[in-house]
Image (tube, rainbow, N blue to C red; front, side, top):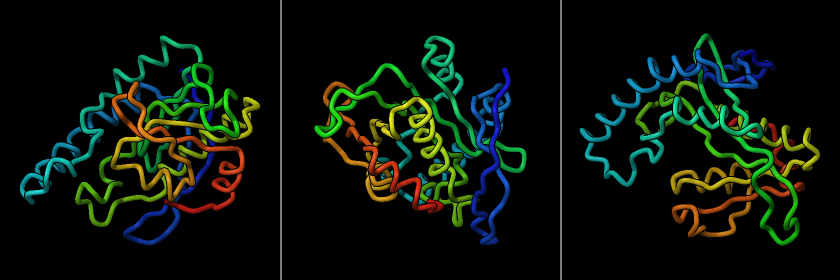
Length: 212
C-alpha cells in the first residue's frame, strides 16, 4: 500500500528546535511494526514508572489497551475509513483513523450536515508528559493529525466540520487547544463526551498554527 506524504514540522522539546517530519495518508505495515517494536515496550515501561510512583490508576493512560493492528482492520472493512500517520527521524510518532461517511453533525447550528469523524487518535508514548517522559520528545503530533482531519473535511466539501468521542483525559486538549464544543456525555458510546468542531472553529484552529 502506498501513502501520500506531506512535509510538516514537530518541536524537538529538549532542544527547542523545529525538526522535519511527514504526515502520511495511510497506516502501513511499517507503522504497525513501529507500534509493536517501539510504542508497546515504551508504554509498558511508562506504566511501571507510574506504578512505582504510586500514581492512581485513574491517571494512567486510558488508551493503554489500544491495539493498532486490530484497529487498522477497520480500514479494510469500510471503504470510507482512512488512516493517517506522522513520522519523524525514521519512527512513527502518531496515528489516526477517521471516517467520512458514517456520521452526521449533532450541534444545532449544523445539525445533520456531513462531517469527518475521528475514530482513534494517539501519539507515541515518549511524546506524552503524563507518562513521566519529562521532557517529552516532540510536541505537535496531535495538532498535525487534527489538522489532517480538518483538511480532509474541507476536501470532502464538509467545510472543516469534524467530530469525535473523547477519552476523559483528553477533554481539555480538545476543548481548549482544538477549540471544539462538547455536547455532553453520549450514553450510546460508553458515556464518553462527544465533541464537535464547527466550520468557524475549524477556521480558527487551522489559523492558530500552534504546536500543541
